[in-house]
Length: 292
Image: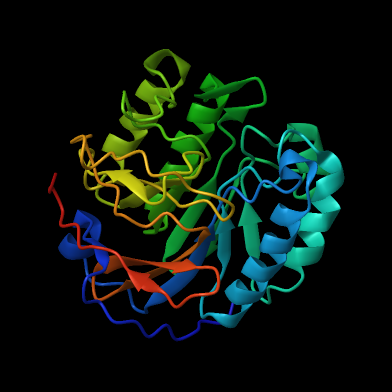
């Protein structure tokens, strides 16, 4: 993949500083990409989501970034006839796009239209991006099988042997969250314990775990640093659950418009900016390692 320049102002951005980027030499080159999630094509059997996706895809095409990550719920409510509509919009994006399934995505439909091998990874420069399905159509909770945990362990071991940093991507957050949060996550008996064991083993090189699912704008936690855990804003709709005013653990900046997120890794830090559809990118906030 051709590396692209990604020029951003760091003032006021959300800045994550993983230990692996501070303790080791800085990556040899800056890296930028885009995160989008929860497009929900076919939502309420109307065409609003499809129209918004085409506009979103056109705006993604216009910004700089090496690739695009879609963190699940490509379609809404199992409406598999919407996958070709999604793919038509995706053609507007002149960058590689990598999806994970969400709880609205039937696995068989995802395999037919998006990618036969659901759990996979790709390497870009010094980064390995791991893509996993931890969602089911009959639940808002997250699930990893023992086979998936074993595969994740082997994949991370191989990345370590190649001296690659890691980014882990799945739809449902692994992190515990209680009221006033959604309360949807991977429970200890459903793979959470195994996931965090692997994260602890590879903590020097795991940058973050990225998720969708919540429709709460940017939502995240930093109590498993150096691996930060982030849920990204939906491209269709977001809700303000007043989490920060209720002192919910973690962070939830006040930005709830539909859009996507510009991500850059440079100067030993990970930077996130939110781009609402039809507007310019908006700086969020700075998050230092170990901060609450």
